[in-house]
Image (cartoon, rainbow over all chains, first blue to last red; front, top):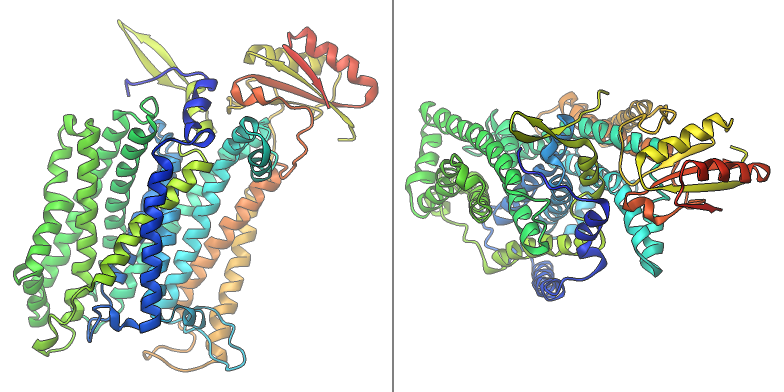
Length: 459
Length: 169
């Protein structure tokens, strides 16, 4: 890490609160544009509730389609936050500082979005409460705790609650800064939400311990969530390609691959939109790309293992499914696109330092990864279900309807809109972490060069 | 703390803040009645301050116990209340119960930890007392809680250490 900017606290406040204390020109038109798409999406949901699931392309035997694919996709994206934030906090990695807040935020908003999909997928979302909460004492019908569809809400509910609290605790010092820089109703809002933060040694000590303790608690939750999501499929013996013991770690590492890529996308956008060149630097993209190479290679190992065990089993239905996934139109096109975008194009590029330090290239390769990872989930879910019955006429029964594509678009607009709304009221880069970095970093002279050195406290 | 007033001295360097803390200690102000306020976490002991003790690590254990208890009540209670065998599993299927118990245990631990962080940080406390917004711009605040009869003495100590401004609330 040779890149360092020496910044005083006034400059840090001014630059990082730029989007909070003033409104950038592009902000309102962008939010309004996204709002239109979001309202369009809610209208589509209303149409679907009114007319029933017949307006989707779902058809026997494919009852899990684009909605469940998108659910798994957004749960996957959510894994970036805790992976990046918690592991880097625990290891006290210095480069974490501008990354953590964005990553945690992505976790919260992508989980909120993921939650929508099983709800709307049910067609009658209000009935889901019968499935997961034991309130129907009058009829004596209670949730079936043996069903993976009950494990899911517990896992995601825990992850969402934990991530939100984690985000809030780390926001407290920055809310204090905002309280000190605002007037009127905003001042009152930040006074209440900062809970009276003053920045005494006790509060700072607790903040440090909290970062480590909550990270340690959130990491096992992060692993469990996508494992449990994978068990929605893996504990089902009747669908070829789903009943696999490898699914839990395979889903978790795939989620990290897509999630960290999403953080790269978001960081590039933050640098471009708010001009935070002093904070989000090429070295951060370089570090994330190195991490992505390791994750992507591990994930590809799991993908390969899944395929090889499927093919080597010599079970006719399993081999037929793999043949369909990889060699039959249109699945073969999807498969090739998935392989190229999630692995074959970005990973070799990331081996080059010039690419890792090129923010535009990192942005586009991270987008490619997420196109590929969405396709991966689609290829896991739909072909297996299509071949659930031995009847040839059901093999291509599922055609994604325009309404479903519309709701996929809605999900992206929804996450972006929530992010932009958050950015208006709260800082996207932790101020106190950035300031702490200035206090704990100094330049030391070794021979003829000055090298930034980080002081670390022993705890 | 039985004090009714707080006096704040504002300094432009950590060294000056540390000198003020030393001065207050030398003047006989009791430990815990004066504190340093910063906009940045500094290394522990940078101002010669008392290293705060906390009991945060007890909170997650308590939360985890509550969480696992609720999970067992939920899983066992609902299955026993509606004992229909599905998927050939026993009514009280241990693996399924373990998964829900795990999640609720972790949820209890996280929620209790956050409650603990807020409680141990002595928050919420919306009355900031003597405070200056420049503290979050890099200035160092040294605040003393004292009775009326020691206000002047506190102001004197803070001034001697080179305070740029002194506020009383």
